[in-house]
Length: 210
Ligand SMILES: O=P(O)(O)OC[C@H](O)CO
Image (cartoon, rainbow, N blue to C red; front, side, top):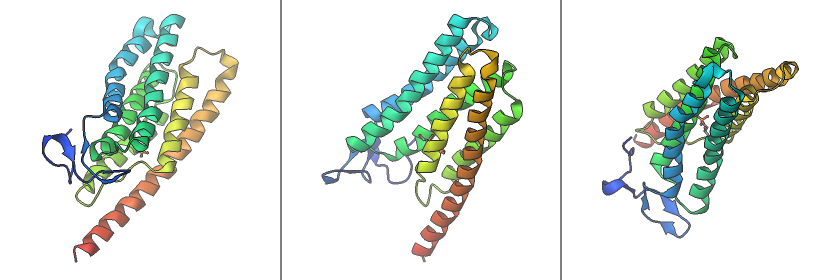
């Protein structure tokens, strides 16, 4: 993906700021490499999930572990980017996209295996795609980074998916259902919040331009 407004030549983003003041931050940095790695783990995770049509406990645990590892990189790349001043416009856009690809793959996989109702996957999918399109729609006016609510939503989705992925005994079904219910609620509420943020950002930018 090419860097959005404000990105200079050679993949350097002059608008990014480090702790020592304004400075160029290379787009190819450890935080963004982790983000892209998360994206590359998606097909590997899907392969493990569908191995033996989801019947093998070993493959199921492998899929769960891959999903968990990829999810942990989500927390780590954000922390590294903030701690070492490696925040770039590419990262702000690519990080949520990588999360959505991983989570979307897990939800579609679970629904295809008949373990999660399709409506859950569709509601979450529509919100995630909608927010991504929204981000590109207002990109001329600025980047909408992940909000606290958005991050909490992602954590809730990850926890719910891990519970669904784990080969747990049937009587624990209600734990997964409650966790997924919370995730869906946060997904919808934060989606509405992003729409409001996008409208405000666009209005402010247009007003600034006079
Ligand atoms: O709700 P979003 O689209 O901002 O996504 C949040 C990210 O997944 C947090 O890493």
